[in-house]
Image (cartoon, rainbow, N blue to C red; front, side, top):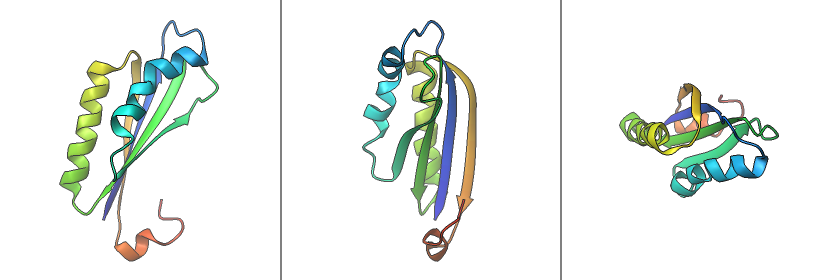
Length: 106
């Protein structure tokens, strides 16, 4: 099994409130949050209205499936999000099915 976290950090210039921040980034959860092998979460800066970090964790038996899915997310973000991308980072984990059930796999 392949598990990859795509971690993207944003700067939201001109954003004046948490409500505005959530409106500008809401499309990420709406578009990707319903895929069965993908978890989507605002992973840092929850109380800051000018910064955001979102993590997308994809899991599949084949790395090609995960790569295609994360590439689609990156493409969407590069053209469809009203925020500056500060950093994009991938954290990858290959594991056996038995390993994935053990605590501390990350």
